[in-house]
Amino acid sequence: MDKKLSKKLMQDRICQLIYRAETFLKWAILLFDLYEKESEKYKDNLEKLNEYYTDAITCCMVLHHVLYFQEAILILKTLFENKSKPSEISFSYYLKNIEGDEIKIKYEEIKKEYIESDLAKIRDILFAHKQIDVVGDPITGFLNPINRDIVKKANSIIFKLKELVGGYFEYASNNLFESLYKPAFEVFYNNCEKYLDKLIL
Image 1: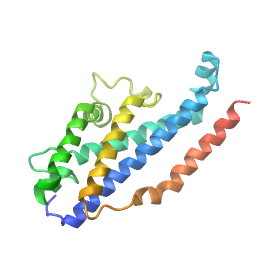
Image 2: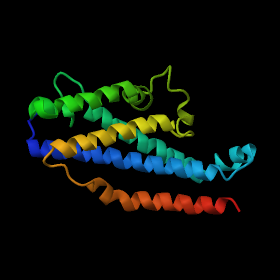
Image 3: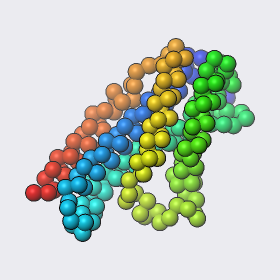
C-alpha cells in the first residue's frame, strides 16, 4: 500500500474480509452437509457412484463448495500476511502502521493456530500455485469435497478472528457481505435441494 490508511478504514476493511471469509465458508459447509445428506439416500454404492456422484447438480454443488472454501482460505492468507513490509489488508499491516500492543498477543495466538493448521500450505500448494508434484490431475480437482477436518480448522480460525475484532475494533460492523449476497447463495442452495429431492423417487 502506497499510503497509510486511517485506523477507521483499516479496521473496516479487515472486518469486511473476515465477514466475507465467514460467509463463503458457511455456504461451503451448508453445501457439503446437503451433499452428504442426499448421498445417504443411496443404499447401493454402485448406484451412488453411477447416479449421484456423477449427476450434474451434485458435481455443481461440489464445485461451488470447493470454490467457496478456496475463497475463504485465500482471504485468511491475506489477513495473516507476514512480510517485513506488509502491503495487504492484513493484521500485520494494521499492527505495524496503526497500533500493535493492545491486540498483538491475542492475534499471535490465533496466528499460531493458523500456521499449525496447514491452511496456508493448502492455499499455496493446491489453490494459488498449483504445485506440480502435489496438485494431481487438474481436471479432477473439483470432484471431491474438502476434508471436513480442514474446513473445521478454517471455521475455528475465522470465529476467533471475529471475536478478536469484536473485542478490540471500534468499527467492527455487521456482515454486510452476507446481507448483500445471501439471496444469491440461497437461490443456488434451494435449487440444488429441490432438484436432489426429485432425483430419488
